[in-house]
Image 1 (cartoon, rainbow, N blue to C red):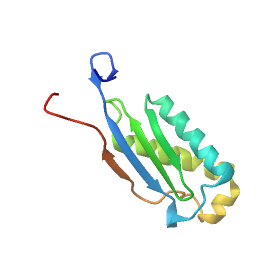
Image 2 (image 1 turned 60 degrees about the vertical axis):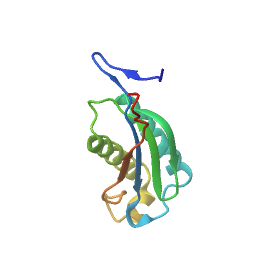
Image 3 (image 1 turned 135 degrees about the vertical axis):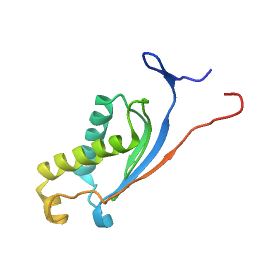
Image 4 (image 1 turned 180 degrees about the vertical axis):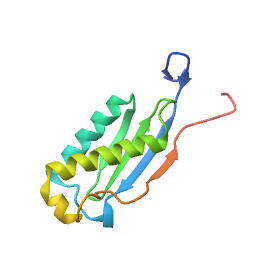
Length: 122
């Protein structure tokens, strides 16, 4: 049987593929910035019981394959990830504030698709 995650009264397996990009697709996620983004994403996901199955930080985008609990909505998860990383990165790396003219590190919106196998056996 599969390795389902368990809550107090739930058994679940919710996998999502998330992608979001930097504003203007500027290649800002390199070196120390990329490492810091990765660490911040790990911290945020850990705080909300989100399991990162795979992830990749490119120079202008972030890809994540995550498993979320039922009480975490997709929009709220993306809000946490984009909002908290932008706030921290713009505070810690002054060159990003110059590159992005202020407070917006990420472009509006995101890509999300569910990723899983549902068969007649279920």
